[in-house]
Image (cartoon, rainbow, N blue to C red; front, side, top):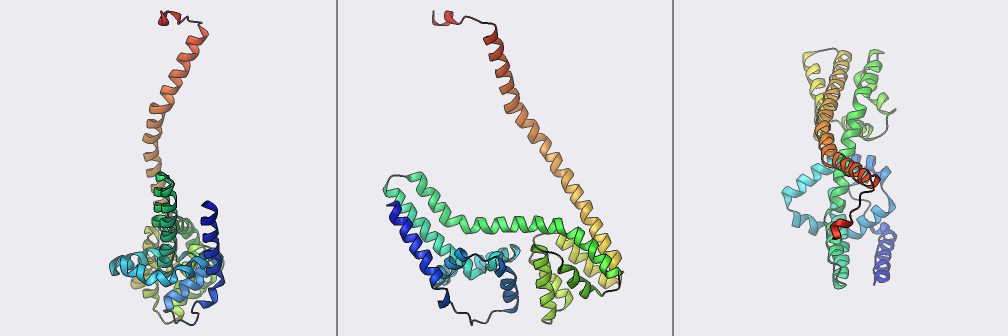
Amino acid sequence: MDLLLALVVGLAVYGAIAGIRMYRADAKLPGDLAIALEVGSTRTSAVGSGIDRMGMRWAPAVLRMMGPKAVNKKRHQIDMAGNPGGLTIDRYAARRAVYGALGVFGALSTLMRGQIFVSILLLAFGAFWVEVGIWSAVRVRKEHIERTLPDFLDVLAVVVSAGLGFRQALERVAEKYEGPWADELRITLRQMDMGVSRRQAFEELRKRNDSEQVAMFVTTLQQGEELGAPIVETLIQIANDMRRTDAQNARRKAAKAVPKATFAVTSFLLPGTLVLLTVGFVYGANVDFSFIKG
């Protein structure tokens, strides 16, 4: 049965990869989506692409079952994840269909053999595997951006102070960086090239990122532009504020870690140590416990 299941799954994946050319490549995409796919396509795997094509015919049905409100919420979550691997709402629905079908099929197969726990795990896999990938991408991306942003602003301030305009300096510095923050900057720059105003492009940058530091960067930059503050001083001030916030967050995490460590020591380490010392003392004293048996 396991061999048959593995054979069916292997043939399905192979057939999906072989049918890539059947996917419509001439579809006209919206500007923002095309940019996001262009940025994310460099990290698309062959297996992920095959799964997308295998479930694409069922994607509309999945989206209808989700409803418009849930679809909009999931689309925003995918944007916050940075469209990992070129992920879109349609590809998300396709993967939900494929993984859901595999989870149900595997759960039924194992349930017929009486493996209830394995069946539950397979159902959970089909229902949440795509969600876990998105949640993980959002968290990792947020941490990477917040770690990169202060140093980026320092470099940007130096380049602007050298005489370049903000738009040219932003493009020059973005070319030297890699990762989620560089992807976000490229999307923002491409939007401005397409005619979007700088204010609107940075507002879209704020919406795509669930990060306080990115929101601080956009807000301070717009306020400085409205008030006519020097851009170099504004960038340096933002970087200093972010580092101060990071230090406060680190102290807050350390303060929360102390009670947890104390609980672990008093609940596990200390009793275990006392038991070990007591057993060692009794064993070393050669105490005769034969009286217990009478």
